[in-house]
Image (cartoon, rainbow, N blue to C red; front, top):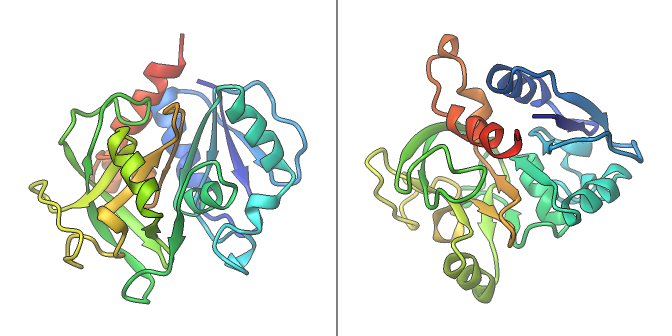
Length: 233
């Protein structure tokens, strides 16, 4: 699987993402700079976490207008696969490659903690490594992870099976109004969503940080294995 990771000024999770891709795919990802105006031949483009442009204006707003995002948009429109994690998810919504917006956490505090995610479908390249209803652990580290969208958008996401991950208890229980289970207050406890064609995925927590037994867990491995299985002929 040929993957490229986009770096913006303020990106700080590119090495974590590169390590996850390297461990699972066996290939070194290409690092791409936000001012690049062309993409090499790739199977996957990843927008990693961090604080692009210092999160000025809104988180991801300036990154969404970097030159490389024209190429990422063209790549996606041609059927390419794009993964955005944390700040990458914010950039995808600001670029309108995914619907909705990531607002300030309901607690108005930066959250750095583990959470549990429930897998809501297993039919996308990003979720096929699990069974529907599986629960896994992932770290979160963000101040603006409160997913919001208009009611009709939420209805469409739910009706079309485009909610990929939802915040949950370890046993799979979901309660959108309980801060212990839905830490940032996201509507309908949504932690990650998919595009209409299922080839673009954005999520706030960091599965790339749990892929190595030396780090204490491998909960995030199924996401990357599923991508390799889907994108390697």
